[in-house]
Length: 382
Image 1 (cartoon, rainbow, N blue to C red):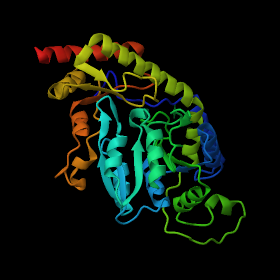
Image 2 (tube, rainbow, N blue to C red; image 1 turned 180 degrees about the horizontal axis):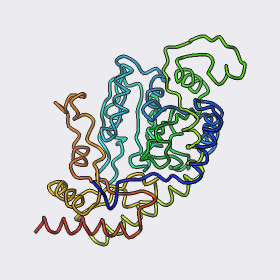
Image 3 (cartoon, rainbow, N blue to C red; image 1 turned 135 degrees about the vertical axis):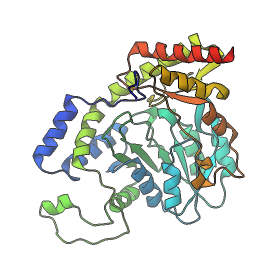
Image 4 (spheres, rainbow, N blue to C red; image 1 turned 180 degrees about the vertical axis):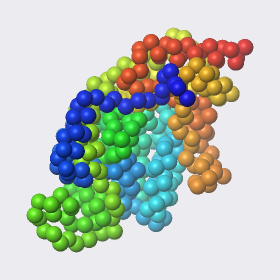
């Protein structure tokens, strides 16, 4: 469909074109010097000791779980409102995803109180997700993990270069390991790609080893005359990023502060338009503090009986929308929700709509989109 306003679009300009061209001209495309520089700058920007670039955000989550030793029968408490990658990777390493509820319809991040209720003798880790780039209550959860001796993994795929909490630390650095994604719809993109961050030297060494088949040397090392032989110390994976994507990442990272700020401006505009136009008929998610996150997603909650009709009318007006996310525990592969209930997660999934939000979205589009939603709600309520 030819959309008037798409859900998201990447920001790609001359800097990215030039960086990609220089990489192609160098004749070194696999993981090499640009990757090392990308890792260095990402770590420096986030105030963290180690950043390890990987193939995608799912690989980052897999490496986080594997490096922490999550294995057969270990439980990992995590939100049901998330993309399925975290739960899939928990299952892949032999762990058991234990789904917790969210705080509320307008703060759809994992509830610390529900986490505490679900901690048991087999709990190995807690995985928090910063929904839409807005901070989960990560300081409280980190303190809980420390008191219980449980590892903390941050799914910060929506939240690069976003600080939070009384310490003003960057999201992804509160836990033992933080995971980022650079998929094409993210705030900064390399097409595919991801990053793992940690302040632990031991975990960083383990993640680097597992990233490349458990091998003791890399192609770039051997290309520069370092030992041609190598050992394999662990059963690892091919989760390397390549230098072409790293070149794009360097350009995107440089402009990320400005891109995040533009998204915050649009989120604040959405929040005001919904409050002024719709009143109680619609609630913008995180609308009380629309500038407190990276505004990766712009989500609104409406009457669930009207949600699909509103989306149909948005589409008829050329406005793309989506749903983030169906509760993971209701997928067939995770039991189809049988015998379980997470009432706030279910209510959120049945009432939310994801709206267009990206740097290139015109200012006037926000009022047009909100107006369309309000007219639809009024029409169906009549």
